[in-house]
Length: 245
Image (tube, rainbow, N blue to C red; front, side, top):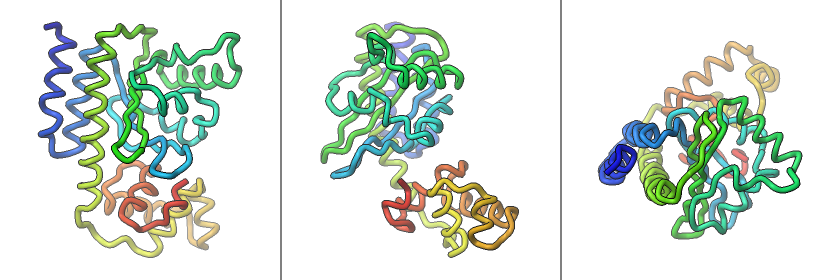
């Protein structure tokens, strides 16, 4: 068994017993690195009866490009977003390129390269009730993805998504300090894409006070990133579903 195969097999064996999202991410990062990859992003592309609206759920290693993808709503031009709905096996970004090239798609890939991503393998993951997820595994190097690599990483990525969702839901339900009304107002306007300065103007408070409320909300919801707050609040029923889109 080669080192990449051994690392992938070890992750597959351990994933179902991993109890926390942080531990799962650590183990999947080791698996990725053994396969010559440096990051992965798990996205929910569409929920049950919902339009395509990708949302970053969690990631491993380097996945800064996924923040750009979500913030700039790049699914509107990304052929991979639609491909994931019908694909039964992983596909690479290179395979999405059209001939002749599509200007918008090429601009998207150029932006990803500026974020340190040259190649990616996308594993589609289909939920039991029709939900669609994707796990995009990336590298800063130009790479091809042989069939045997695709098969083993598809299994590993599917486990990463499924087990990660279980851990995410369990951790979201864990008790924490109560979110205040003002903190929830700040989260709502974050979901609307407003900056701290803009939120301060809306709520008639200083930008520093907004930042203080956002820091408190991060601690209470267990989310280190500002962009993760709306989704975390939505998962706890603190925000209506459409306020995070």
